Length: 451
Image 1 (cartoon, rainbow, N blue to C red):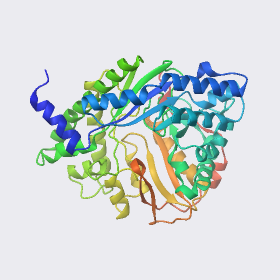
Image 2 (cartoon, one colour):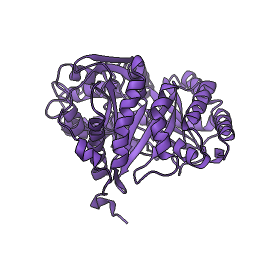
Image 3 (cartoon, one colour):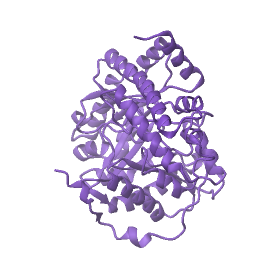
Image 4 (cartoon, rainbow, N blue to C red):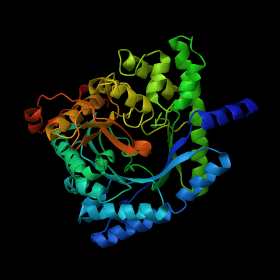
């Protein structure tokens, strides 16, 4: 039974602690839109998206008003476009422009799925789509792109890794006049999930229903506020407190997901219970770690504190919903987290420490500005390192780095809004070019043999 205390606590979370539903994401399959004629295929894609998502934004706004719960983004994810391109042919950029028109027509914040899954090699349509990513992202505002280059079952496709280093650089160069925004809409994955509602990596997996509603919750500020009220408890108590808080956050997400599903007459998929930060002061994963007792995020002890946080969030969230999916855990995007930005500016947080942190939390090296003259093979090596962590640990990892064209270490890059901004971070300057040029595949680890 809901009591007055629970209601007041939730109101406080929303009004003072930045609790929100970060996104309602509608996943839409485009497999039935394939056609040998490019024009007909694009027409079918536009018609299906606008028909299915016609009421998505309006419904989200209605739920927001009626329940008093902020819903920050309404988004769409679609079948990886490389699959459609492989079946239908034509210039992949035309599909991106179709997605952009559909996103504008229904009023969503982003549409994800300009994607390719190449962990074991390139199928028809994959390489053409990947090579088109810089142009597609430069010509669209709402389209997001992702490429899965590895998995625990398949190993790491190093030919794709080498290619993606060049694609990331090209995406930065072609959008240099807009603070290299193209790279902020491009994610390179290992073990990408099929049901992720968060951008820029969302796509609608081939095993998903024809249409589905996935919800991503947030609430770093709520977790930090809860810890601030218990300054003297030991770490077991900290974990228990985080679990209870994550339970409450996820229940709210479950409520919104079921309500959206019912009103849109679309099946409910999953709740992604990730702690997704923003540049707003107080809404920070880094501040949670500092509330645990660290002087500054990035110092020694950060990885252990983050492991505790991530584990407790997942345990609390899975008690609140039977259908948890997506990424689920603690995000550490540097430019999107006020505490991470501070730590990077003062030198407490390095990219090497961030890499260590990704071994125990959700996703990976996310929204990190790097020097604008970084060679493509160094970007490829960063991707390979992060993919290796994901492959060996059977977890999702990703890289979303922004070569800040014309800027060097310590200079600032700014996007505004949820994407935030922050300092350009230093990288190692030794060359991995020969290693990357070898190509081939890094074999799957022994733990992939689970059958």
